[in-house]
Figure 1 (cartoon, rainbow, N blue to C red):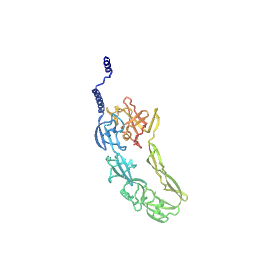
Figure 2 (figure 1 turned 90 degrees about the horizontal axis):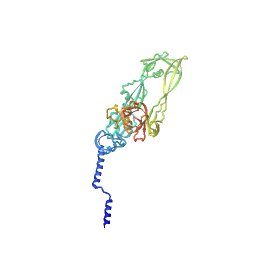
Figure 3 (figure 1 turned 30 degrees about the vertical axis):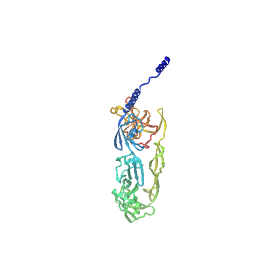
Figure 4 (figure 1 turned 135 degrees about the horizontal axis):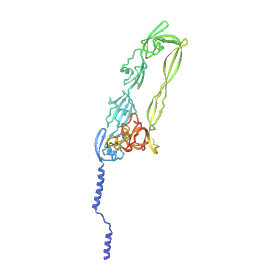
Length: 477
């Protein structure tokens, strides 16, 4: 009996001591409270500007995309967002701007183009549709002409009609001037410009001809001609530039190689009221000169060519204009050379050049570092430091001014913010700021600490490092 009691006492002494249940509950509550206090430290007020409408939101988030989801906003690829949606940060921008894409219909003649974009300006919308805007072109909305540089409202579908102006190039008195018009015929366009055409004046194109996109026009003003052939006199009006043509207009045909001389030159700069022509018997020799007419190139995006390269999609061809010069001989002696007569042997054929849009990963060793990049651009680099700005000044991304932050122009920043880059002599960096830039140059500004500041004022190369972002501007603004 004593042995049994002793054994029971030993077993009780060897059992582990259990903590009371209330102690476990208190511990769990303290852990939950700690996590809650930690998260509440990131509870912030955010301002959302959606299609120019401002909303306020208070939430905990470490990505801009989370803030938008908490606001109940779904963002698609065509929307413009001022912040990187997927970048994790403990210091998100206080204000996030979202311009939502909406359908835009552009009517250009019989062609209808559909866009889904957040762009606001009519001229930019035409550019996205591959249409270049020129003076006197019209953009209609609801049949009303609108300013191409005035921002359109966001958040609702748009329908725009583009009516290009017709270009008229006029050569008169040897001088060329151009004007553009929305008129349908040449006669209406000339009347709009107060250009009068006399009965004997010559116009290279019919006045009733409908105008095309580009129109070349020559106006030759008539003058009085009096021709002397032996004891005969012939008189009349002509817009001719040379004596032979003038004689035909007044009803006198030159026989064989008759020569016509005049007391005053027949040109567009010296225009007497009456020109006296004397006809002599002469011989002539001819010389033909072929001159090239240059062609123009237009540009199209080429999805099969590497980014920032140019390809030839359609080769251009030169046109040719043939000039005939005539040397006149009187009694075997040369007397003068008549103004050259020109005719077009062939028209130039415009070419089409492709601008590459295909991003390809390349490798290159720079400063002893092997880089993987998908684009490199020659840029003019400057540098800046915190002491040049008010205390507490931060970059556009919200990061402090320190080495590793690279600023680009305001036109580049929306499509490049947060991209990793490399600059020879500077090192790795992230695009996190923007500035005014230098007009006419691709420009970057390299951030430094005050202690490590290095002044930059020279050209260098900006490498855009992998991974390749979802959106790439094919043509840098």
